[in-house]
Amino acid sequence: MTKKNKTLGEFIIENQRAFPYSTGELSKLINAIRLAAKVVNHEVNKAGLVDVLGSSGDINAQGEDQQKLDVLANEKFIQSLTNREIVCGIASEEEDDFVAINSHDNNNQNKYVVLFDPLDGSSNIDVNVSVGTIFSIYRRVTPIGTPVTIDDFLQPGRDQVAAGYVVYGTSTMLVYTTGYGVNGFTLNPAIGTFYLSHPNMQYPENGSIYSVNEGNYVHFPEGVKKYIKYCQMEEEDRPYTSRYIGSLVSDFHRNMIKGGIFLYPESSKAMNGKLRLLYECNPIAYLAEQAGGKASDGTRAILDIKPTELHQRVPFYCGSKKMVEKAEEFIENYK
Ligand code: AHG
Ligand code: MN
Ligand code: MN
Ligand code: MN
Image (tube, rainbow, N blue to C red):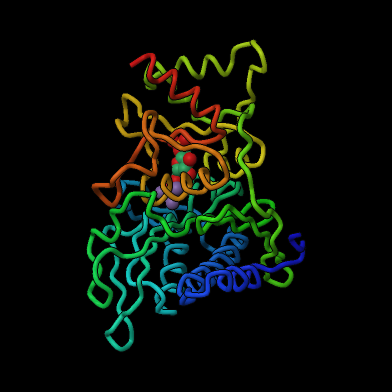
């Protein structure tokens, strides 16, 4: 039986012991992410009291107006990972290019690269609505000890070693997988410790929530329009409930607990939708599959896509298996 009072630290050590040949490198990496999550949580909680709201005045590689907290969260995560010398490379939504990490002795023997979205849902920062951080971890494909190359980052999501997110919500949670199910930990802010609160999370096979920015409706492909109408129809267990926060992490977290589907389709305005394959869709898709859910670009599994660029975007349909299958059916029928 899972003890309710297990800490994330204890959980990481126990899981490492289950693999006798493990070097502990991944455990150290998860520990660094845990620490960075607490630092960013502290910054997010103070927003409004100190000068971290609003735009930084810069535009990121995606052409988005960078918020001050986007920049701060990016710095804190990169700092935490580089100071501990536990990765060989980092890619971030807020960096133009990937960053190769050197070690103090110029001989970086680490095998993992991390890709991340430091602050997800940045349009919600200024209005005190939940935001998050998303991370994705791969084993490098180029030889250890050499500088990382773009090939280390452009790996299909199926090859992820671990992935997860932090949601800075009514409580702060860290949810992650290393390929053996999904576990969620809630931060006790008084003592700064994450506790295992949601062991072995399971995506309900079906659900009654659909999450999409309906303001873009007129630009959606015909199949998606028809699927949305299907969600709204008074038939069987429908109409479904519409819930859209505008922070992928929070929308996904809710749907994974309650059952639902999240859609960010391609549109006549944006051919590949908005969400980033490497920093958002792959890690979320890995979590979805690990919890028994499904993630697709409308026709194929997100995790099977071979990325071609760092900041690549992709249409995203993710959630309860049966709901995603239904959406795919509509997309297929109206091609
Ligand atoms: P980010 O803040 O990291 O740029 O991501 C924002 C993303 C995602 O969190 C959310 O699901 C989506 O953008 C919302 O987009 P719209 O405002 O177009 O609905
Ligand atoms: Mn952004
Ligand atoms: Mn994001
Ligand atoms: Mn972001």
